[in-house]
Image (cartoon, rainbow, N blue to C red; front, side):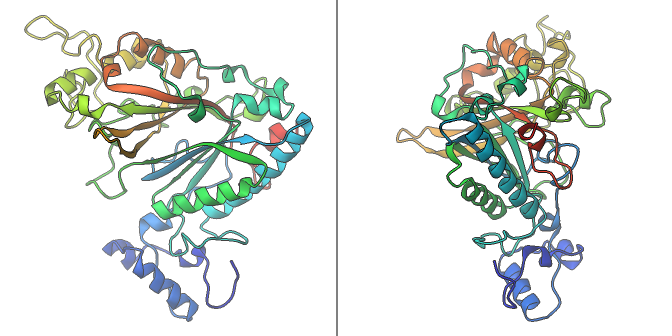
Length: 416
């Protein structure tokens, strides 16, 4: 994009939240009007709160892990294309990660691309955009870095409920994009794809969504497409053991992963026609929580501890022994915990009327063998919810810590 007088960068539209935020300014025609005013030298109207929010690219951790869930998301995996010697793959990977990091830092700051910007997000601010990068197991073979591959990237075990499509699983490189504006998220997706050039080809790509900011009276746990609150027992950053559970501690055998995390990514199809045939009371027994507010069936609020031993007048457990909340509870899994940060998806309706919809499950942990794996093993053996879901794709990625100023993501690995 040029800097000529009749064009304006997205950053120039950012400002304090004044009347625009108070009145809920819709940035469509209004955004275009602001751009025209700026080009004409007139005062620029401030963006609404949603548009002006930014997330830092540089820092201790990559953005997109503890960032509040955004309303729009894209997940995309790539395979490196360099053939021949692993040194060639490593050289291509260095150049690619440099390009991607430059692009991500600019877009997350609300700036346009250096050149070739499509203009898709021209009228919007960064809208809490995050772009997060990870490396799959095969990346290390293709770049001659097998000695730097952590044991935590060992393949996930097979689960009896898996019906995985290998074409939509794994990958050398993984990118998670999130934003609170659909056009901002799509703009970032296109920029990342274009930056890949001939160095990497798309292996798979998935699109997701969540509720928009401001759609509820106040912040609350998101609902999934089954209508259930999803993530009620998520670890909270304020908890004293949060970092230990979610982020790799410094001083380990692979310094390039210091303060990083491991992402398990799964496309989970929800069999909504079957689920919606259940009464609300039966749905609550499957989950073990009230549908209205996420409170345990044993009473209280969403944050109340599950009273797993409590029985009703009939002598039966109030939270059934195969309820999803019971089986997945940390206290039932030796304290195993992971930070769930999913997106819902809907990819159309089949000829028979069956919706292709469900959850793009993304969870974060310091060690997937202590987080995701033990919980999923237990769910696999008797979760009442398993009748109504199908795991269709899977991936595991090492997500290094955030880059320092002047660094690109993965530099400490690729230049080790």
